[in-house]
Length: 273
Ligand SMILES: NC(=O)c1ccc[n+]([C@@H]2O[C@H](COP(=O)([O-])OP(=O)(O)OC[C@H]3O[C@@H](n4cnc5c(N)ncnc54)[C@H](OP(=O)(O)O)[C@@H]3O)[C@@H](O)[C@H]2O)c1
Picture 1 (cartoon, rainbow, N blue to C red):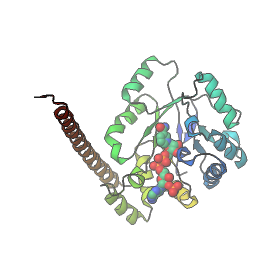
Picture 2 (cartoon, rainbow, N blue to C red):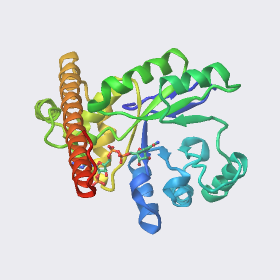
Picture 3 (spheres, helix red, strand yellow):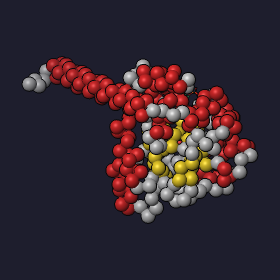
Picture 4 (cartoon, protein in one colour):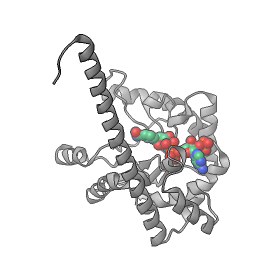
């Protein structure tokens, strides 16, 4: 089994790779994409009230013919409809039309401080925390994963392919390209395999059948310790570059604001020094 089941703190289990629907929109195409993912072997679907495609996810699952206990679905309360949490979740149930969600409760985008408050106060500990996870945010996100591990909260890592989709040309490309050539794998498979080594449940997506098959096969890729370290190091390098670029942008903005301020003051005849 390439992507094993992961045990949750309430006794249930989830598949360690999920098919996400965030970018899929809604309508018939979305049903087809989710259906395609299920047909290649995904049995963990990630939707959300905010994605406006709970209905489509539910429809694809119902039409797949899989028994309810053989598929895991996550949805997320958005808080945008002004309803109570309970009423809003009832709506999600109606949208998905799958008769039941498990009682598992998760959170998303919680940092260590948020989790600490929750662990100290909640009657029911969340089973999972869904967070951004890719090499360029490794140092920022690893403490959250480690805190989760220490408290029985599984981390789900979304957008693991950001180095390919949003930050191509960064330092991570080099080791990923070298590893994918050596293993005769696609770069996206290497990134998914890398995320897997960090112990997170991977939440990814694609509209393409071949890619989805590759994602599932990536569960069998064996990265060496050196492979993992090379991606970690390149991720850190990229993160430092981004930080440096942010600082430069901020300094430029401050300089621009000051120049405009002096200009306006001069125009009004106000002496600012
Ligand atoms: N909780 C939250 O706040 C939150 C936030 C964001 C996302 N999520 C969840 O995480 C899921 C996955 O997020 P994501 O879509 O950002 O994940 P991702 O796995 O980083 O990216 C998936 C995208 O990568 C593209 N892709 C794959 N291989 C590629 C390559 N070699 N070159 C260029 N593009 C490539 C795919 O495009 P093709 O369709 O063309 O294959 C697909 O659109 C979402 O659907 C959602 O369920 C949760």
